[in-house]
Image (cartoon, rainbow, N blue to C red):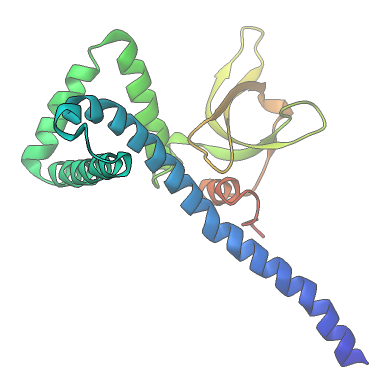
Length: 204
């Protein structure tokens, strides 16, 4: 009888564990597919009008495949370029040109810093992990302190980045009195894992 009860008790736990493992495996795939789909649509929108005269009579799937091949080759060549000294210098020069364009430089620099923060360099961009009352009082969201400052009235405030899940490269910037933040003992890496796993990978 006790053995039967043990089996019945472990079965829901096993199902929960398998579901959690499935979500952890699915989230990176979904994010990757979403990013590749966006890049593919962007690439197809740019390349297809150029090659349309030559492949205008091709089947739509064949034209889409051509865009995919060009995208893969382009990413590979960009990676090769970025790993060589000469290539890094070329990319650096191109980056200098981009950073001279008034509006574009803001978007590019911020995007690069956000992406870099989630590539293992988060300890420099993010100071600590906190809980912030968002989207309204009574609820708590995971946030990353990016900077602190002194308000005109002398109170201490913090800039907190509240990422969306499962894609933490987008989110909301909250300016919050430091006294209203709930500080945690989580590391930045643990906080990022928690967000990207939609709460499945909770730190102990």
